Length: 78
Image 1 (cartoon, rainbow, N blue to C red):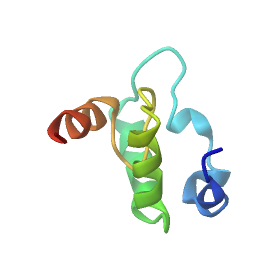
Image 2 (image 1 turned 135 degrees about the horizontal axis):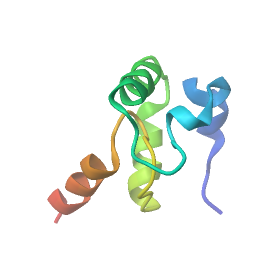
Image 3 (image 1 turned 90 degrees about the vertical axis):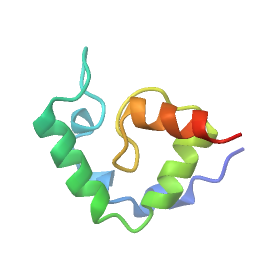
Image 4 (image 1 turned 30 degrees about the vertical axis):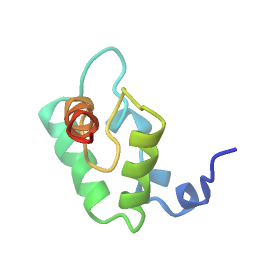
């Protein structure tokens, strides 16, 4: 089982999840800006990004990164 203790400390814990996982589409510019604002003040954003990359999260905003940005990060690692 993957250690997810850090999720209890995430700044997004009490934020509407639709900001990070919009229904039926990619996030709008305003949703992405709001998500990144939340992530910028998050004390566990590095752990969040590691989790998203390690588990292959392909949907939503994780640690302020979009699906395309995470894909680029995964492709950049040999």
